[in-house]
Image 1 (cartoon, rainbow, N blue to C red):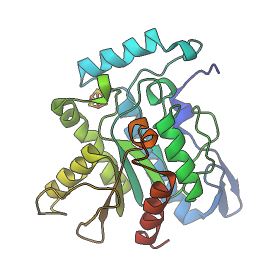
Image 2 (cartoon, protein in one colour; image 1 turned 90 degrees about the vertical axis):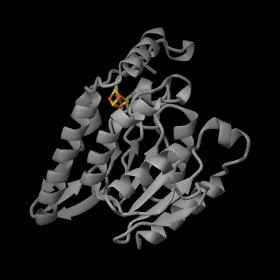
Image 3 (cartoon, rainbow, N blue to C red; image 1 turned 180 degrees about the horizontal axis):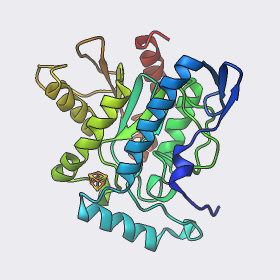
Length: 267
Ligand code: SF4
């Protein structure tokens, strides 16, 4: 499937205004005018942040790697115009669930330009989000496939695809600024950390904000840490093929964790 990718395609959600309510076609919800203004404001900031992220050049090694992958391509995707840039946040910034991944897949998000889109990890994640009612559909193949999230958003510890899926400490440090700005904008009640590195990043951020003062808690699937002001961190095995092929992570395990986060959000 050949597609062309544009920043606006990632960032814009269509809205129809009807009298004093607005129908948000992306989430399928009606929003009163007062709430709509707040919604517009948060979407504007979200879009601004994403525009900054996609032009970031702080990590020369990663930028070079992503571009090289985009030029060489995988045989199955030769007719794709790879994204090859930092991958922006995706989802509903009004939602109080923030999913924190590791980094874009070389031929997944680095190809399609959307978090977890276009590879097996994303297939697993979006199917589960659809079952849990956070996604409008299970299918996630390209930025123009119609997928929208409601009540949650997705970010990553590192916005550029790293060699061997392993960013260096410095690269994670460089990307921390985007993570902090994302958290400040979304103000999540629940962080869902996909894997150990994301878990650690949330704890470090929580410490810096004085939301958490203890040692690094042990990461585990379903492990939960209470932060202050009714915030929580929940651990989840990353839906990488390494975990899903081996049965370490099953669809039921993913469903159970998402159901738990729903309960925590009081939804
Ligand atoms: S990994 Fe993050 S900080 Fe580094 S270049 Fe990409 S977006 Fe910028």
